Amino acid sequence: MRLKIIAGNWKMNKTNAEAVELTRVLVDLVGDREHPRVVICPPFTALSEVARTLTGSKIHLGAQNVYSEESGAFTGEISPAMLLTSGVSYVILGHSERREYFAESDQMVNAKVKMALQAGLLPIVCVGERLKEREAGLTEVVVGEQIDGSLAGLTEEQIAKTVIAYEPVWAIGTGKTATPEMAQDVHAFIRNRLKSRHGAVADEVTIQYGGSMKPDNASGLLSQPDIDGGLIGGASLKAEQFAKIVDSV
Ligand code: PEP
Image (tube, rainbow, N blue to C red; front, side):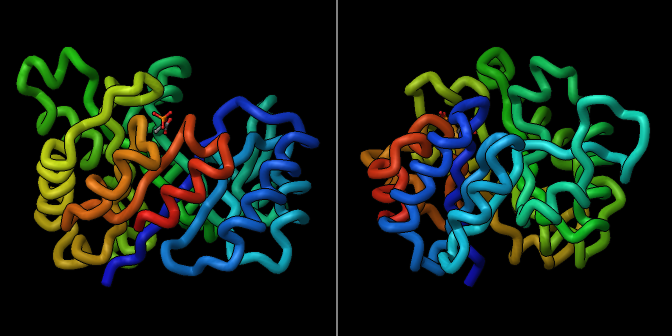
């Protein structure tokens, strides 16, 4: 059985007080859940306070980015050690918003993935095609290149620790969701690609779906054989909605 993971990407939302409040409600609703694994990813500024609020619960803490160097003159960046000492265990890397607004390439994502794994963080690596690319029949070309580039040079052991999030860019924050069949096709493609590059360990890799996942579409998506959880944006900011998605696994 592959590990199922529901992760909430809070993006650039929530002051510290708001983050603690949302966390308290989540601890009440899903704080005792081990299956699926629940991960919340608040902004950097709230990590330490959210970590304290999570004490005693089974919810894991994630960050939304990390830099690919250990320390030094990199103004504004955050290192893996800083995250670890803030109670973080997961880190989202290569989200389409980072690729789009901050020009993150597969090479940069790859450097971050390697640094995160070396430090003991578990990466959630995001891939996904834009609408124009899907319409041009390029989904597998684009996603295949992102998978190869972002995970280049990882050992089998490192691949086993890596989570992939398939997030079609056209479905993020738009209310448009891939149908369960469309998502399953790409998830199966990703698993086969991982198999061809990294071997049988591909069967152990958790592949999440992300893109307007909500309580009313979650169970259809999560019942597909290669969809092992979700990366949730908008609905993760509403405790009841997020908890319902957790419940539908
Ligand atoms: C995301 O940004 O990772 C995401 C899936 O967002 P949303 O659920 O809002 O589409």
